[in-house]
Amino acid sequence: GEVNTATTEIISHVVIYNPSRATLTIEDLTYTIYLNDIEFATGRLQEPVQVPAQGEAELVLRTYLDNMKIPAWWVSHVKNGEKTVVRAEGKARLKAFGVSFTVPLSMPAQEAETDLDERLDLENVTIDLAEVPFLGTDIELYVKEVDTSWGEVNTATTELLHHAVILNTYDVPVLVPDMTIEYEIWVNEVLLGNGTVPVESELVPPGGTYELDFSTVIDNDVLDDVWVSHLQHGEDSTVLVKVFVVGDGGRVLVHEESRELQTDILSALAYSSSS
Image (cartoon, rainbow, N blue to C red):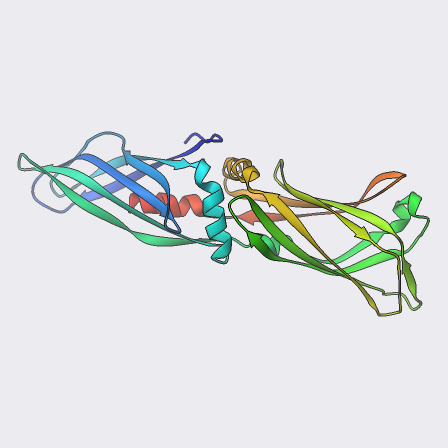
């Protein structure tokens, strides 16, 4: 269905079977979908449907997700280990033998999972500082790993913690120069977060390491744009990390790396709204 900054629409087509020998009319059907117990979406039957005795009929369900609930859901998702439990409750008004009656509905829970923190990990990256003329060095820095984990998460911001390990692969000591590193994290065309890392000069012995700890703080307001972009790309997004060295001589891109981020949240929602 339609996707905008305020609402995401899901249209589900459901075929049901009536095993009884009497024609059944579904006059109305409404439901609420919860993500980690947060009321996230509502939906209803598009129009009444008559289901013939011992026959089939197709229901068209329209579900509307409140994108304004994304920050609250996101906090619960991250705190739950990047897992979301999707469940739905509702009611249906039926008519059979000329009598209308209402029955409660409860849809089985489904689990949706992501691994964004792992998608932001880097390993075995070589940065050629000879490409940065204003540094005046021709060494290559070998970044053995950048490990990313979740920090503090609240409704306003999300913190990512990064631990980088630079390994001296040379047979002689290497001087890591004073410099400033900037980085950007993109999800499709949306800037998810960025940051600046000051690097202090240090002489690293052969086989030794230089370690950096830094963090990225994401403004949760941008998650609405990320969500819309992710859905518009069919829940198959590209997470792009760009690394720059900056100084008086300018800003030089020294590394970029992309990862695919796939989810099946809408599949779980569609299942909940059609079970």
